Image 1 (cartoon, helix red, strand yellow):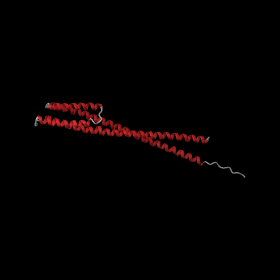
Image 2 (tube, helix red, strand yellow):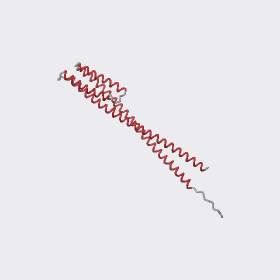
Image 3 (cartoon, helix red, strand yellow):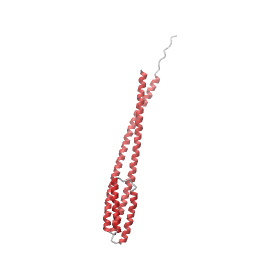
Image 4 (tube, helix red, strand yellow):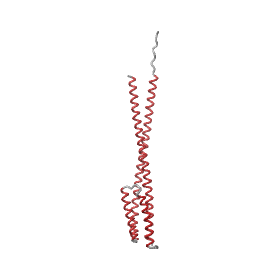
Length: 209
């Protein structure tokens, strides 16, 4: 009966051991998934936010030069036209790079508005309507401000998500440490239980003959 009880305790300990090992494996898998998502967030912040912020800065500089050229009084209309069309060509080259990034629905709407304003600048330039060129350039610059705000919001959102995953990984790490301590305790129990069983010896009866 005593041996049966010992066997039962060992079985329970072994079962708890298996459960703990399963939880540790599951938490390790979750940690790996969180690390993967964190890496994706960091890449997204760089590729789709920081790089785009640089594009917006280039857009703004180019549009500012277009406004200056349109307002210039010491150049001919032909010179203005050539300078502005060359600047618009630079904007079109940036457009291609911008469209390679991941755009949110809201960002895409504003970007299409920006392209429309740039097309209007092009049309006004062809017609040598310099006041309209300045007006459409201002419209494009205002849209860029909205796009810049979106970059900040999206970057902040990704960073918050990344921090949340990092905190989850820390919690999982603490859980794994606690489980490993329990695992060590159970292993020690099984080893001591086995040692005690081996050390028990039944005294032999001596014959009187």
